[in-house]
Image 1 (cartoon, one colour):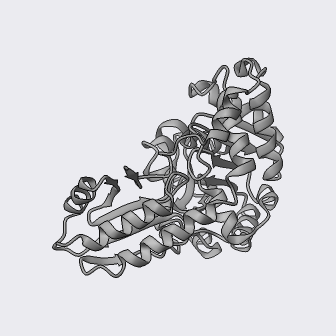
Image 2 (cartoon, one colour):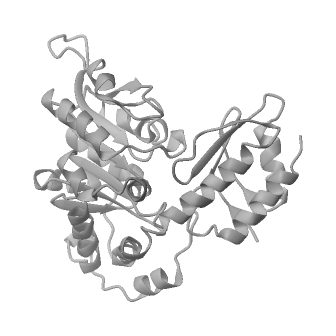
Length: 341
């Protein structure tokens, strides 16, 4: 038995999802003729209180399209310094949108009104980039899945829009946040101009993300998707997995969170561990003491058929998911307790 905790992207389709994929009604989506894609796009738009959805191969693509829709070259986006759009998307903000980034510390990656207010450039100063868009991330991957409550986002959105800024949400693990807060996802559509949600992480689909947006941005977003090479043909087989996941895999995310918290609690008791970030959702990030190399920890875990990910000079990340059950949790706990350095 291999236990893969590198990411929640490693899951395989469940039997029910596989059946939904194999029986999907499909067409050519580049021609706008795939009924399953249309159903998924509208389902996501309705769920988040938006007008339109655009199905794409990846969360990186939906993020990059969303930012490009909202900005012009030489603009600046305000975001957390460890934001996925900045740190883990290959320099796409600069390469795709020709914009700069104003990087903020935030509270475990969560921006406040004060953070935004202090980092808006003077529009009348030609030496400075034009502050254009505020991009939030929910949950925050670099901060062990920390999440915003809706009231926090509402404050940031209302202030930012009062200053003429647009709002983008990287919601790669949006549903992980929602099951914890209990907030109504429809309210998010009132607070953002573009929202990226990923289906291949916590929801367990093999491929796909959806960008939801206002109707006036849909054509531009679809044009950018085409330019980025994101137009797919009989994509309904993949869209059907997303529809199934939204109908069946959202509430169960709490199981992943409970297992992650148990892992984090156990790891924090180990003598060779320096610290464990607060485990808010399904991500566990812990730091080793200076005398312990993460590579050595990963090597010993690998010998026990457990996969994890180096996430910094002294950090390791583990992510719980659909294919990590209680039996695997028990084995992982036993293995960690036996490790010594």
